[in-house]
Image (cartoon, one colour):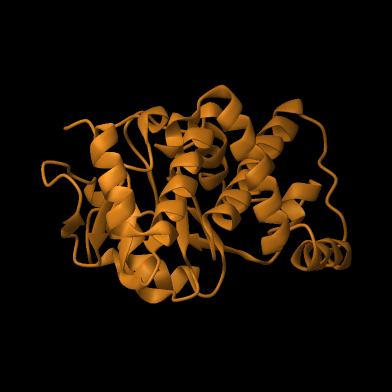
Length: 260
């Protein structure tokens, strides 16, 4: 895998234009934040964002890089057929990443970014028959708004794409049973916000269950009321963008190399 020099970075930024460069920076920041929170899985799992002005292309990580190594420049641009259309042709992308992300980007014009993780809490909840329970405020964000997709094995079969997007429907987030979490958004910031809330909700559920006490589940009308509150305020795009901008400022202080 070839390293990107500063000269190549500048040439890339000039070639792709400012709109794509900013998406690259945001997506690289999401990778770094996932690593910083311990939600990564070595060189596995993947996140993507559609290329501005090119609905049939998306950016994704090069297979073999740890999430803390991802930068705006070393993201790989591929088309919906899996062809690398810009970047180092020596790079490769993980098959399951292509299958999952191409499926969503092809089916959902409203989706600009897709996140996927294999966290311990996410996998644990994905293995429970009840799925995500409405037992915390963060879980309420997903009340009756969360999709589920049955496990079919490692997601490297193109035939699975239609079943995956059928199960996702018009929802923004999904639990892949016996597998992990998947979230979407109309921006990288929104997809990351969905992931952060869903991951925290899964962590809280596993912790509550481990406590051994009887779980308190609010009445359905209360759960729906809270979900609508998130729909109207905390889960909207503006709040996601403000939160994500704050997290990028934190990265800028700690290690701004993601934006190179």
